[in-house]
Length: 113
Length: 117
Image (tube, rainbow over all chains, first blue to last red; front, side, top):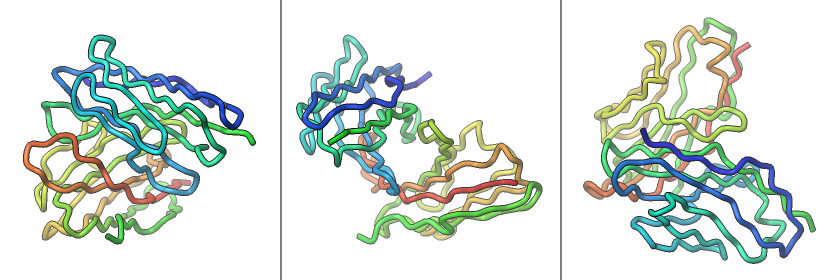
């Protein structure tokens, strides 16, 4: 079946540190891949997406590249800020089998000043 | 764009009682989804509507759960005979209908936190 596995948190970094949050997926065909972010007290919102192999999604300094050969979609940011503290969810939408989006368990990020 | 609205924000109930949640999606969005999220986990898909038609239900959705979307606008999720295991955040999301596209982003509400005592 379709599933998403992401690295466990929490991840604690100092401001301006480099961030990587690993995400791998299992899916048939060619799913679309997403990163959603949930800031404290707010609903989930889309951070970035990629719809085909080798696509790079980017937003607010975050990037992730769709790697079909390794079934991965790792999230990276070169220099994190305190305001990036949130929970990050990797997700996929299967190419077939309906329109539901499947989420990973989430990775909580704490950034210290 | 006023966003996805969910009511109530919090609901505390006793085991065995029925509860109903409401979701108002973004007005032009035809697709509406319900998810459940427990502490430390990602959202789990429950059900999906295309306009007023309920097109998919997860096996997680027991017979005690029912969802409706009359007239293809707002939706309600009812849980009958609540159990302590039903305690969770219930999330609603909507998205526009762009045919067969599977890469549309979801717009989430802030959720309804259910606590069953």
